[in-house]
Length: 122
Length: 94
Image (cartoon, rainbow over all chains, first blue to last red; front, top):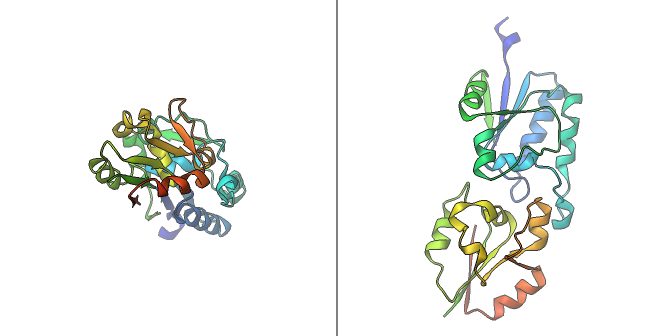
């Protein structure tokens, strides 16, 4: 019965294009989603850049994997959190390319992260 | 002896930017490229951004949905190639 309540947090802290961390975090999220695991996505630090609207990775010959973020809902990945402090530190507005992003301050973000039994950091 | 500094990482997540800035002298040039473009909004580069010897690779900034301030010079990768030959040495910070 204990297993029924298990949930997974994926913490994504890398900018989208220079390393493969961001893409790998997304792939893992989609896999867990496919298997109907209770999975929540957390974006902090440079990871918040992944959510910003109007990015054009085609310009630097990178496949636009960010488009796949709009499919999160179909994988039951309905809990997406972003750290407000990370946005402010980078002078970013809450202008995201997906909907239903929950902006949390650093304490709320930490509390939300603490709700999960498994945390994977990318 | 002037150095061309290629800054490829973000000051928000890497201390290497501090090392780059510590070694930047008056004759040097600084190029923001790849994740280095994110430094546009970092306070530690606020003064350096408006220096005439600082450049940003335009395509890399556009790809990341970053708005380039008017006073910052933009450059293409081809033009960057030329700059390499007008400096004595090149250091990549990544």
